[in-house]
Length: 475
Image 1 (tube, rainbow, N blue to C red):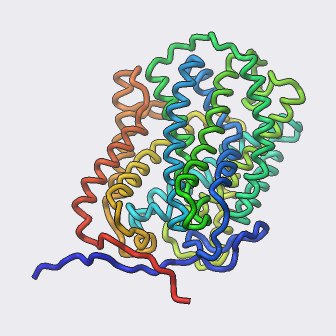
Image 2 (image 1 turned 45 degrees about the vertical axis):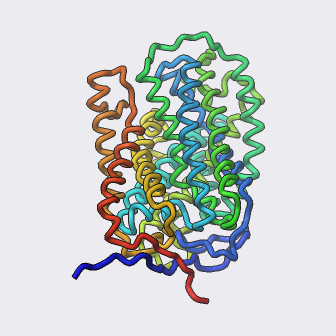
Image 3 (image 1 turned 60 degrees about the horizontal axis):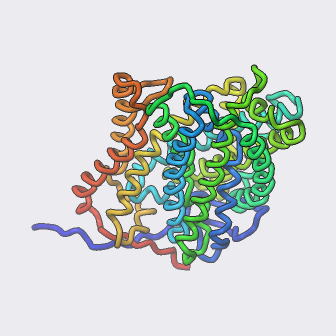
């Protein structure tokens, strides 16, 4: 006798424990659970500051330096590449951020809809490691070097100071992170605005570049996309506490503009700075500030250190959320806070190992987009295919175990990197044969994973309810 798939199911939400509300100096309880409706607060406009501050730091500047000083683009080629890459990454960030208020969960919990309860361990695990340890280490090094240049205090001690501040903010949680970004934003914006104006005035825009060609152009499009889209797996983490009835357009626009404006200006400043003659042998942060004069240069070094803290407070907080979103049972009220502390210690160790090797920036900035492209392809295609259906129940449905998400993402990563990656660690089949082709692995990964997901999902969709409704526990 034939069986029919039930039209819908009801799933009980895992609600974040404890009382938190809008308290700033309080440890946020729980982990990646549903944010209770009675504790929702804030306005969409705050997201502009939330996403301005973490990009007002040296890693953003270094992307521009990479474009003209290392890859060899002319300034105007770099402008176009930066506009395309940053624009695309900021657009997807805004789109993903807009979904947070309605569902009230972190971004990597929303990822369970296409990936399932267990399959979601792939993107959530990658994000936990890359955010909580990788990006944390990279930004900590730049902040420590800036503080070292400013104070002449040993670099290792500067690193300890920077890391301690970052861990403290992330340990307390969402509200303190948001408050810190809000108050850091005007300070960072003012200092970097002055530094950027001086850089743009002194720069030489006539340099033709080293002939990087289309390949070099695509490398920078990929790097700038990867940098902006690197925030995408965190998007809903900072919108899930907003009331569910806030404007989705304002939410997405505020988040996307925060990423776009900060990345665009500082990346262009970095690209322009390489045409200004500076003293040889300086560490990268000192080299960028050497033409600014003593007062502005010192203020910029201070801003670089502060910007590193702003970026890493978000990295370690979201890295800890992603870890708790992997589905592990951590029966502790402070699960997320203790996870943030653990990631901070691991990130500190990695940062110490790379404290005197800033060359790791280039490979890291290029590699980061390789997994985000396929993940985005799966996530956005699923969002489209499930339009008109209730999907919130899949967020906490342990029986929801589709193959389509993680299989498509894995295939997208492998195929795109194997064929199209072009960097110092590995050169893919296509750019190895045609060096001028460049690196389009992020685009290919997005398309391959998205198309494959649509095909596998069409086969799997009859095995589970089309709608899954989320309800909160009684009482």
